[in-house]
Length: 332
Image (cartoon, rainbow, N blue to C red; front, side, top):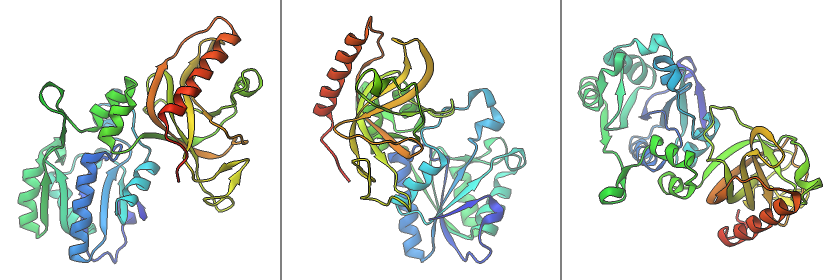
């Protein structure tokens, strides 16, 4: 998949496209419907499917104190979009100049002049242009004027009665912050996953406890589950040196390996730095400096403080047993 970092990176010889537009944080099931339609329209027209997204999040301009923690990095959005058939991702650096464009100016500059859109797919809550003056209805009208087809999808809803909720990034973010990663996975269409480089921690996991962990640290902008212990998996990302199937220690690259995961600080030792620590079951390797993904399947318990090492080791042993029960096993 091609990634165009900025409007000036769109190829001048692009003859047409099928476009879907949004932040796409998490690329959840609602987003996947938009992508599926954009890909279908692209195949019909014989043009590439293009996902237009924004970095940073538009609220950085309008409400910098209310920028939500992101469910997925730009890299994760790109990987997921490619998996669902997107051919190119246009990353728009949302700034005050672009925010000041009228809805029609936005359509002319981006959709018509740059992307030569044949079809555009959005959700019915889509807004664009100065002060969000443009709506999905506005886009339909402008599509008729400039000669591109517009498909508007209603918001996806899960549950019934009092349990009904819109599938959206805000709802998913709230579930993750509450530690309900299983509910978040239902809306995402896959397990919530973080991606990062394994960093050296205090070293207590292996030396003192007998449970060596891969430690990851994230900026505040990254959404993380509530402090506690989770069942999930760890996957070493392939490189040219170590392609999928290669071994790092005895851990196969590219394979999802069951892991007991701790999120938070270490209250027993008085540590205040928040981290994600994954103990991979039945495998051992030096993962320092390796890029990995950690996926969360279910919550086991909250974060607790223990009076001594023996109590902590016993608790971790129970966490490992529960992980074995919850995680089906290794998978490619």
